[in-house]
Every structure is written in structure tokens, then in C-alpha cells.
Length: 186
Image (tube, rainbow, N blue to C red; front, top):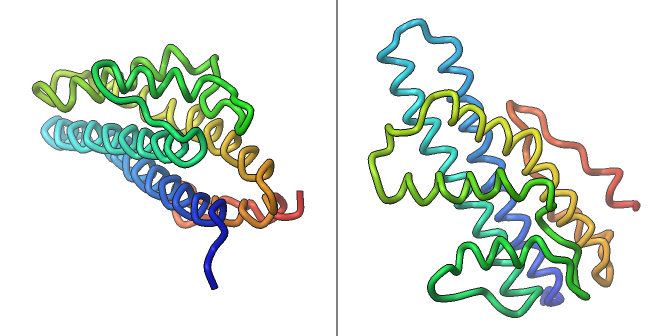
């Protein structure tokens, strides 16, 4: 049985979401380790690991944005400034989808984008512990739930959308699974 185009799209989007939440959960674990450690050397190691997970989480979210741009918008920005253009594209609602990023998150999304760029290009230890904790907690408490909700709305607006929501089941921090069973009947 071949999957409908939208089913394939949402299966891939679900995989991108799962990857982002996995990375985010790993970052939250590192934040907990920073808080629990009394040894400054250990805290430095956990801070570097948290920075790596913040970077990986943002990278996973950008992969999700690219997937949506490619398969829903039929165009991914290229060339100089492509990352910024992709963010702008996700901030805008189109005829085919809701906005994926909310305008209220614009400033922090720019911080995340700059953090990601700095992380890739310079010394990874330059970011303060408090900045890393703020970025990871922001992604967990604000950005990831908002993006997930907007992608859920996108899925529900597609033909047979209530079935597509099942593809969007990220795991929460720890061993619990986020409950989206009620969304399948929406």
C-alpha cells in the first residue's frame, strides 16, 4: 500500500519532530545535571554538553522547517541569508498552512539562530551557563509546544488530517509520552 503524498509528508514531519524532542530532552537532562553537580569541572562539562544539545535541537527544528518549506510550500530559500529567509517563511501563514512560528517567538528565535551560527563557527564555550539554560528552557516551555501545535493545525487542515496527527507524537522529558490521543478525534 502506498501512502498518500500528505501521509508521507506528515510521517517525515513526525520524524523531524521526534528528533527535535529527543534532542531537547537530552538538553534538559544536561541542565538538570548542571543544577545537581557541585563540582565546577563537572558543571563545565555539562554546560558544554547542554550547548551541544541546544545546537542539535535548533538544527532539528530547522530541518522540520525545511521539510515544511519543501513539501508544503514547495520552496526552500537558498543562497545568502537562507536561514533568515526560512525563519521569515515559517512566520507567515499561507493558503496551504498556518504560520509555523508565532510572531511572539521572533526575538528568541533570532537568538537561537545566532547561537546556532556562533556554535558552528567559534569556540563553543563562549556562551554562559545561564544563557544555555535559558535557551533550552525556552525551547521546552515555549517554542517546541507552539511549533507542535501549529504543525498539528497544519495536519488537521490536510485531507484526512485527523489520521495524520498520529504521526506527530513526540516524547516528553523523561519516560512519559505526551498524550495526543484526544487529537486524533478532533
